[in-house]
Length: 118
Length: 108
Figure 1 (tube, rainbow over the protein chains, first blue to last red):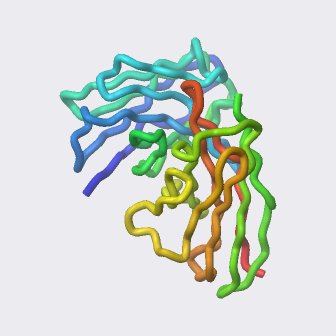
Figure 2 (figure 1 turned 90 degrees about the vertical axis):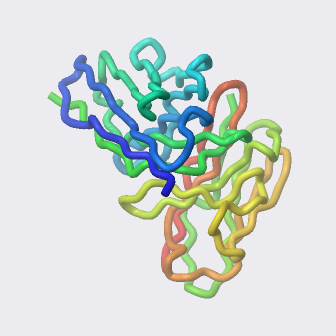
Figure 3 (figure 1 turned 180 degrees about the horizontal axis):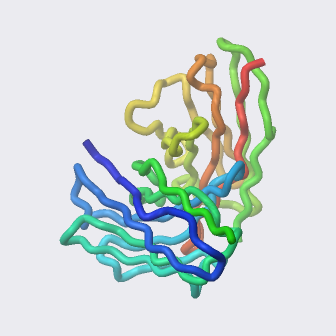
């Protein structure tokens, strides 16, 4: 079964840091690009960051650029999102999603919840 | 930057009825890069349609997508009880992914 499983969410104070992980299984992880997408409570979906299959190409949404860092470990089928200088408006469920050739996302994890609050 | 505007915000329909959801782009986009997702409460999004009109694996044929340039449509031919959910369109352009704000399909 093709799966993505996020972890690492939690409660953090404004200005703090958190590292999210996404574990892949059931497919050749090193062949696929991955997105992070988030959803604030009661709101819509917002793209956060992209990493190509090799890790050589990386993009960020303007809202997180300079604060978040995406990376991957193909040997361990894992994706990461290092989140620094967290703000209250970063509070959301964070999903990792597999990206296909025409830039749609065909496999999604169940998400991990990040709450930024004092 | 592309903006996707979905309408209506909420669609109130009965099971068995036809649902027509609109997604309008602020500028012309390639239909190859237009996708639709379904999201139920408390769940992750699920891919329904990619390339504007291709159904994802396992998606029933009551779901169909159409459109080009700036105007795209998701049609659910006959609503089943499990189809009541929020639907998002998504596009890609210039190293960015954009989602519409969503259309909620609710039971009338």
